[in-house]
Amino acid sequence: MEQLRDIKGIVEVPDYSLWWLLGLIVAGILLVAAAVWFFRRKRRKKRRFLKTPEELARERIEAIDYDDPKSVAYTFIEDVAHFVDERNLKRYEALVQELTPYKYKKEVPPLDEGLKRRIAQFIKEIKWQV
Image (cartoon, rainbow, N blue to C red):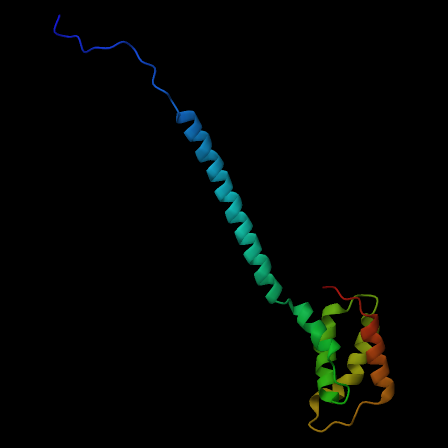
């Protein structure tokens, strides 16, 4: 037994496992938060370039050229329908009835001033739902 002199007493070993665990949890939370922020920002940026059908219709309505009766008829009938509600449905249907002959003929006469004014007034009164 005298040969076993290399055995030493109990020495306390520092334990950092709790700190490592907390560090990993914080790093994981930060990583998830960064990923959520990145994808939301990416989606928001992508959405900024993609326009909804209502936004496209509004742009076409605002760019109506009243000198071309065929394009006025098609643009008004197709695009204004996105913004019609029950308050102005009857007026819209009346204007559609007046514009229908301009759609199906090859050569069409120019729009009369009264019809142009009614279309412009209707467009001004539309409630944009974008």
